[in-house]
Length: 149
Image (cartoon, rainbow, N blue to C red):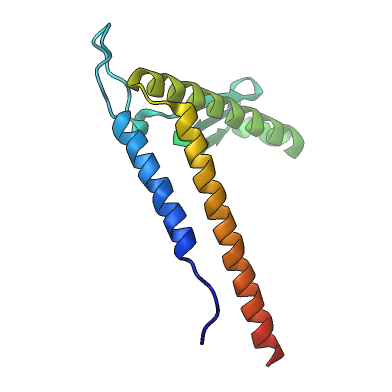
C-alpha cells in the first residue's frame, strides 16, 4: 500500500544536524589554550548550574540547555505550587545562561564560529521540522482514508 509518506527528507535533515554537531564537538574537544597551558573543557564537562529561591532550588543542564537534574528543598512544600514553579523556572534559566556562557567561552577558545554554526543548525532544524510536518500530514491523510473505508 503506497501511503506517500517519505521520511527520507527528515532522516537527511537529522543526519546533517548530527554531522554539524560532530564537527563542533571535534573542534571543541579538550584543546590546550596557548597562553596559560590550561585546557578547554569537553562538551561533557559543559554543565550549567543555577539556583532559584535563594538557593532552595538547584538545577543542572547539559549541553544546549537540556535539564539533567533538579533539586528542590523539601521546606518549599509549604510555599505553594506557584512559588515552587517560579523558583524552578529561575533555577533552570540561570543554569541555561551558565551553560550558554560556558559554551561561548569554549567555542571562542577553540576558534569555532558559533554564530555560523548556530545558523546552520537553525536551518537544519527548520528543514527537519518541515519534513516532520509533511510526514504528519501524510499520516493524517492516510488515517482519514482508512477511516472512510
